[in-house]
Length: 376
Image (tube, rainbow, N blue to C red; front, side, top):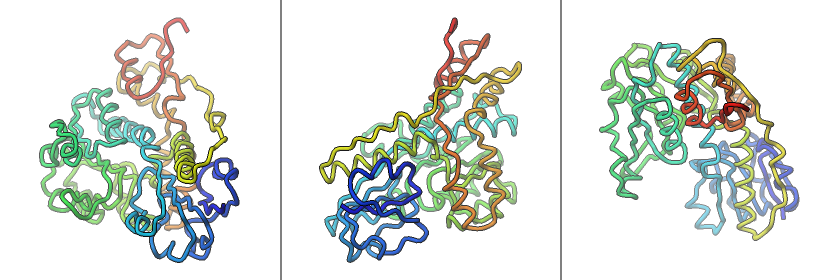
């Protein structure tokens, strides 16, 4: 069997070499002729998979080592009888930890008490549900917005967008949908931005086009809203660097770039391929995870300051922001994203709180950290 596989997928050789001949490729240089005789194709989210790539090929299965599938023409695959699998939820923990980190950093910069803030989690799937739990751990009022999920489950907790649009912080975790009853493309446009107040804040780690970037830039430039955090951008990798200048935190689509999520995505893509071709896998990734590290709040910090000083030891989001601000071209954006360090998830850190109170311990546990037990 011939497997064409994106060479930027972590541990691609270890995970897939036992199944046949590997044809590694660079996503930005991929041409249809490169996969003409491949039995299977394994891609990341940056590769558009449709008729223009696959027509005339011998490909029988496509695996996406990504949590989403906006880049996959699944209707075309179905008409051709080509199987498909993806890594649903592989990076959900990482993205929720990105949002958590952004919240505590922005709270420090803007002198917020997060326990006095409300957050609307828009899209309550794999990522959004974890964001909601972590925001609750920080003492925030959490509003859940997911009309499609409400239609599916009948659960009245999932509110309409209109019911949550007044929250202090709007955090988006939706797929990019252009048609249907609940479109998400340009959910945030000039009409919505004009309705928001100067005390409201936006966070987007879903898809760039969920927010109309040019209209967000005007709103930020005129001070119509308090601010924004963006990990995703319209037109990636050719982003609007003048918009980057206006956001509090801007990163190159790396919210899900944790070591655990990348390993999980590779494993899940491999498992989907094995299921389709009825094969068994032997590669075990456990040895790739880091040893547990003990960290503690800095100095005499307490409460929200203790959370900030500790969480930045696990994830240097400011470094990710600085890296993007140092780029100038689409090629720079691509390379920054590909080469971004794979941070460990919070579960690999144990917090030594020493004499801190139990409330702080509960916060860290709610955020996904482990905590040193008394007497350890």
